[in-house]
Image (cartoon, rainbow, N blue to C red):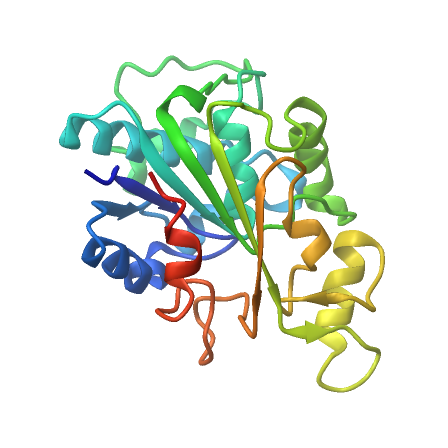
Amino acid sequence: MPLPTVILPGFFESAQAYYGLEKSLQNLGFPTVTVPLQRRDWIATLGGRPVTPILQQLDYTVKRILEQESVSQINLIGHSAGGWISRIYLGGVPYGKLNRNLLTGTHENICSPKTKFGREPLTWQAHPKVATLVTLGTPHTSLERWTRSSLDFVNSNYPGAFYEKVRYVCVAGKTIFGKRRFGNWLAFSSYKLTCGKGNTWGDGITPIEAAHLDGAQNLVLDDVMHSPRTSKVWYGSQKFLPIWTQYLA
């Protein structure tokens, strides 16, 4: 039987943008849920602050589906920033701080009432729970000042496909070549901010070289756009699903 699957949205995306992918995976036989993020949930991570609030919601979602499906492992799909955040979640090195605000207002059911408050960094150590990690258009490296601290943490502590018992599948797009001209300027700027050079291939946001990890199953898809909100095809479109879903457990 296919393992249940959890989708972690990209930076400043809500769960709603991934409902099409969620439904497609369900039709393939994978019980699938998306971490129930809203765009405002990302505000607490702005300015280079830790992504702990996102990790807490991810952890709650994973524990819930493991219990519902009576299994010990899941597949985890991280889009864009959701991919490197997932790598933090797998790890055992303390990161960030507990966010007290998640126990108030609209987030009061996200964390267990037994959660202890404190200023200590948290340890997730979720790698035994994850059979396959798929990252879609994830910038696994970045020179951008606000995300660099967290990405440096990830790559220093968990370089490449770090956990041997986790299958890492990193999917990149070869769609737009960055150039200093109209129509390619956004791609050029984004690529340069990510890997230091703009004249390279990527999905319009993430360059190929930043989307892959040493030791992973690295894939490149032609003509795929970065965002699930695009009017064109993206990583979760039907035509691309057979290419990377074959690696799901």
